[in-house]
Image (tube, rainbow, N blue to C red; front, side, top):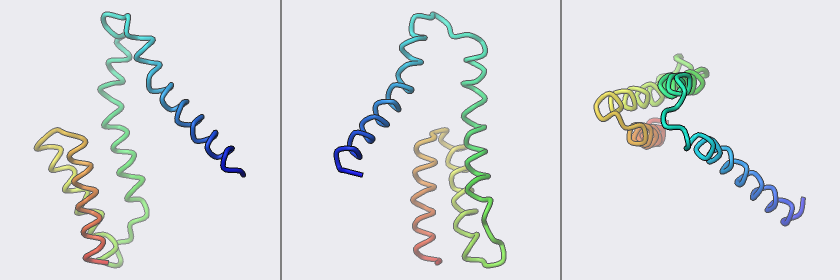
Length: 108
């Protein structure tokens, strides 16, 4: 693979990603009120996606060794408590990630 080919692939993926993020707003911006199913999906999908990510991240946790599960469980608790307190996804996920990385460096 040449550098030009790799660069072309990066630009194509970035462009298509931008297009898939931008297109719904461009197509639905003329609507005064979104359809009921769009509103329902907007309420249901974010918690569902977070739940799937939590299950995926914790599926390989081994409870046989303390240092293997304490960072993950503690980080999940930090994220959940911060989110319940502040209701800010970016803050809770970011702080949970930093907290997890600090614990992994100190415990492991």
